[in-house]
Length: 463
Ligand code: ATP
Ligand code: MG
Ligand code: MG
Ligand code: MG
Picture 1 (cartoon, helix red, strand yellow):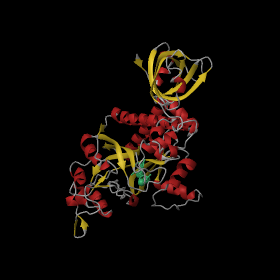
Picture 2: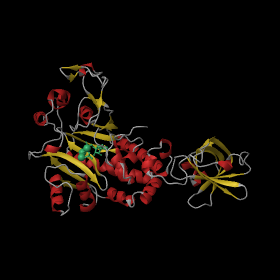
Picture 3: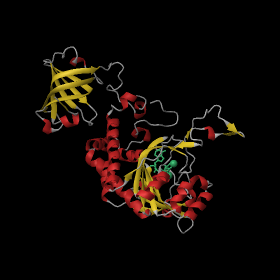
Picture 4: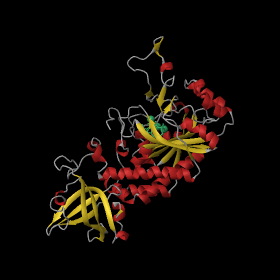
């Protein structure tokens, strides 16, 4: 007997096949005349398949008629054409085997609807709900698209370290990794003695794989890293997690212009893949969570991204007549309210902002000749704000060294990074895309905690 998924069994071309399906009961309804309809879901798609079970089954009276939501079963039977609305097929069961019951009194996924917040507290239940099933199927597709996009263009996939000694972003948002006894650390002259630590120096969880990615890009060409990233920031916002997934391409010999082109093509590829391959899940989001998102994504795929310099954006914001909580001045880092005004009210679509003030950007970004700005870019989208941050990297050794001094960094610690400029330096660029931010945009899920399997936020890491 061939095992099939519900996704496969729902296709009209499977009619006539003898199959075996395994999954969880969503509902059971009994009909007069001695038969029951069971809605079965196995996570392969949003939809259920209808199983028709009748009193010819030996366990009909004592098991089938007692199936409740959450029970796990195996069904063997024939796929038949269905007269029911919204379904091409159904299964006429010749055998229903019960794996596990789910007590109807305590199983919480009964008729009642739960908030996403509540579902986060129930490990087993969240993933069995329609919304989260769709979220994680779309997340899976986006992850696959990420690899496809870069692999098809000849990028090398590099795994950068999770444990690192450098603070790439200089924002002081790092989690420390240590084997020292934190209650009674060894000390010399009143200071913690890290020479006694596992690595004999202070180490942290990575905030970005960029600097290490640059080592590979400046020898192997075009590379990308895709993995978990950690930031001990106040993640009590709907757009920040303490652990999130970031994709970071690093492109040898690319200037900011090429970097922006890659970012645009990359996002368009992700959006078309989810529209093509997650049609059912995307229809669900379009109807229930993010009205109009399909038209929005289609519009983005079909048009060119807008570009706007930081300086022009400041001008737009200042002339907008809008009352912002944070007043707009040249040199400030844009806040969410400003990014949202630009994408939702002014441009009414995604926009790439570029050439930011050097004072608010990390040391590694390439300085412009104006002495005030760096070759940075952010891709902003409506509702979410920044989904990509990137830049052309400073390839001139002397400029890089003086920038590090300017930002109070110890050049000696970055000797390995400076060597990339000392020996055969090249212009190069790259960016970081937050996987969860993109998923928020695609699905319309308001809270970033609801697009990652296991959200890590202040005060929560139980499972
Ligand atoms: P933000 O301004 O939103 O705090 P950032 O400028 O600090 O973001 P970058 O250092 O530019 O972030 O990181 C690149 C990308 O990683 C961002 O564009 C965003 O998509 C994502 N990202 C950054 N911080 C987080 C976080 N705490 N949780 C989830 N995604 C994040
Ligand atoms: Mg940040
Ligand atoms: Mg930012
Ligand atoms: Mg950024």
